[in-house]
Length: 307
Image (tube, rainbow, N blue to C red; front, side, top):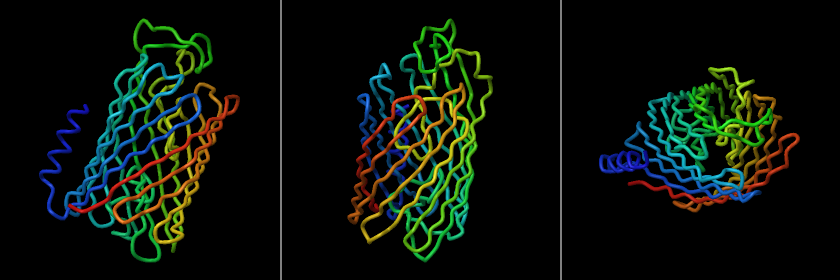
């Protein structure tokens, strides 16, 4: 998969017109229990409409029994107020678990061109450090669907999804469908975004001796967590206080299947933009009832320029 991503990205660079834009960044997170995550991403704008964005995540902690490497790719098309995207990822098997995803999203902007590099204020195309465009106000509205394929060769001993495990006679395959609605609103120097995600499963989870899914990306949380989510919502507030500084705060609440306790995550940080270079830092506090709290520090940098 990594070789395919490299070939596809190289072909896109060779085919890119002279006015294409390019950005690349890397984030490093560290936290309790020897938690470490490295996330690298790139985005290449092919003319005014097409964007191709590969990404890679490396994750490990004391409780992972190995190193997870996730390879992803997103292709997006934007024309006028509408933006469409398709994405997929592959997580090779580690400690008996593997994952694959495929999904699509649709965003409608009430102020076309109000964001740079096609990056939106909410949804799968959000997360850019530079989402403020011209004008006093802007609104992004959208929906997305994502299919996650889990395959696990281990099962829990007892009913605790975080408890000890043993091997299965046959891998347990499970499909998870995430449906999300999102919105972003900008007025003057303030930007507010929100996302609500509901998860559906193609099999009954109770009684299957399932462990908590060991690789979980939750919208609004910078860290990798564990579990099978049921409903999640996140709120994010960002300010462009002075031309180069953008502080932000975020809150995410998630409920889970398998009688796992609810979680709350709080994040605060900021981005400093220095022409082509942007650097950022953040702090994440993660609480899950009945389990030890976890804290993470996030540091990152990105480059943005035109070809």
